Each structure stands twice: as C-alpha cells, then as structure tokens.
Amino acid sequence: MNSIQIDKQTLNDIFVQAKTEYPGEACGWILKDAGGKLTYFPAENLQDKYHKLDPESYPRTVKDAFLMDSLKLNNAIEAATSAGGELFSIVHSHIDCGAYFSEEDKLQMSLPDGSGPVFPASNYLVVSVNKGEEGETAAFVFNPSTKDYDLVQVELV
Image (cartoon, one colour):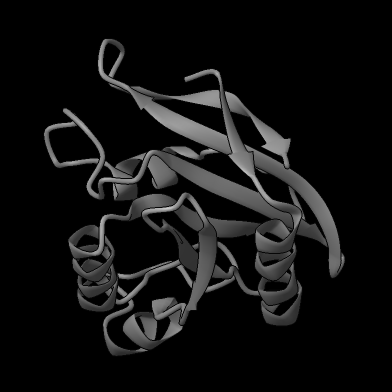
C-alpha cells in the first residue's frame, strides 16, 4: 500500500477535534462501512487520568501521549466487522511539531514481540496541530518484512 484515500469531511472532523483538544493530543478511530464510507469516532484521551493515578507507570501527559479506552475501541471494531465493515485507521494528533510516527507510537501500537500492530487497522493516521492551527497529515502502515511502519501518501477524495 503506497497510499490511503480519505474524504475531506472525515479529515475535517479529525482536525476539528484535534484543534479543540489542543494543547493536548486528540485521538480516535475511523471505521469503514461495508459500502466503503469512512466515519471518524473521536475518543477521550485518558492519558492524564492514568498519569494522575500512577505517574510512575504513566509518566506522559496528554501533551505528548494518548491513551484510548481499548474496550470501546474493540466493541466498535466488532460492531463494524459484524456489519461487513472494518477498522480503517487509528488516529491521533501531535502538538506543536510534525505529523510522524514516533518511537513511542510504534511501541504503543505494536504487539509486544513487534510482529504486527495491536489493532487490525489498515493504517495509522497522525495529524499535527501547531499553535492551535491545522498542520500536517501523515499515514503509516505496518510492514511485516521490516517490522516497522512505513509512511504512505494521504490522498484526499
């Protein structure tokens, strides 16, 4: 996969949430229905709640990390799959920097042995928000031969 296609409305929905949650990271997921329509589902970034409860295990805050409710995400994946759809993308924002897949992102989104992604998303989408304004958009797909995430082009349709 050298590119992904995303519609302007879905990307706009992502940036609306990302700018609203700035200066914290936003997160969510995109589901693709059986007909190919994409829908973005914003999620609550739980990072600060976990940091407050256990700062040693969760040293990062929403300024540089995200944590979603995996039960809600798994329930959404199951519902989409049972209706003929799929999880298209896991989404998060970066604050006052570029849209890239950091080493922390790779660690959090990969199985413990590094053999694949945690979630069955076809891609991982990162957007950046700089000083409260829309920035870059980048997508990454897992490459099983290198056990790393490759940058792919994002095509607006």
